[in-house]
Length: 186
Image 1 (cartoon, rainbow, N blue to C red):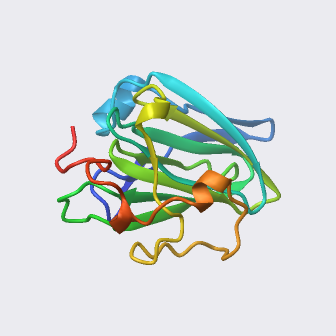
Image 2: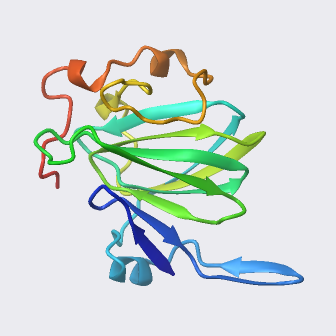
Image 3: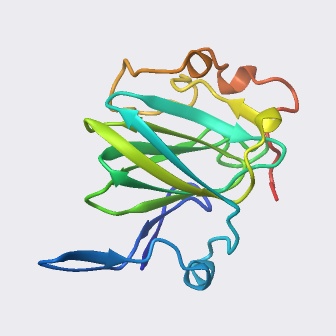
């Protein structure tokens, strides 16, 4: 397993070991001991599966309180996946990093708790899988506007398909007082 650092602390790209031959392939998608040795949390409490068509953008979602760390991967298709540091007081507040995840490259992306997360489907469709470090809490959920000009994410499309809620989310600077996590988040 290869762990690649990104420009944001704690946000990493994981390249699992893949063993393949003419019959197909085998890979571990999670091994608590090995991932913990690599600096990832040893405990996940919820798995989620999302199916979306080309051009669908989901995000930028977060929870506060009860922030969720997410280990994400793509089982079918391809997405452009993004993490944004939304921790008030962080030296990298408002900065983002992104990676292409696909069934073909088999990469995983770890988004730590207290970061916003979103993805855009760039293939015909995508089956998106993620493990969470905290249970989903609707009352703790927040959303940052996907195209916030202050964040400046370079999405591979300018006209995604959005939910009404995601399309009406506020930019980071207009988030209500106390709705964002504080740095250091724990």
